[in-house]
Length: 123
Image 1 (tube, rainbow, N blue to C red):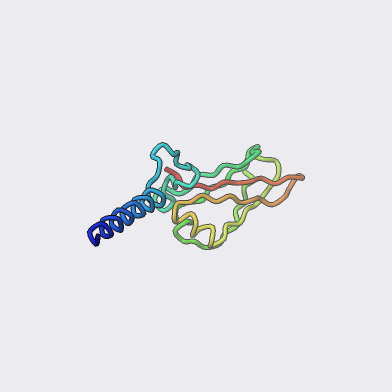
Image 2: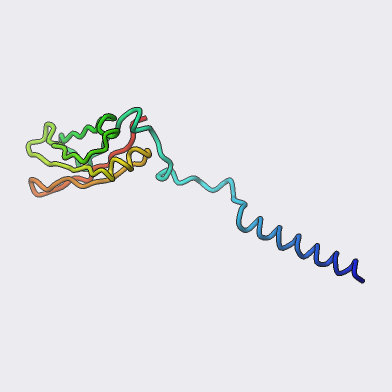
């Protein structure tokens, strides 16, 4: 009878352990990776690339030296547009870029509009 109890307890422990393993640690390899959370590029080695929504001639260049320095800075993004906007990157923004994550910031308002600017690490 004691052997029977040990066998039942051992089998129960095995089933519970298997369930916990399957429930908490196994994943479906067919599940797609969320590409928006995977860092691309390297800001410290390659600098950045910027995308300006609704762009009509504005330009933003953030160099790798500026990322390394990490000091808050205001940029004029007028470029060839007929009006100016500016954007300010904080030291926290530069910290985010240093770990190769992108940031989205808003420009100042001019000519009745603003621009959303995505700054990502260059590849």
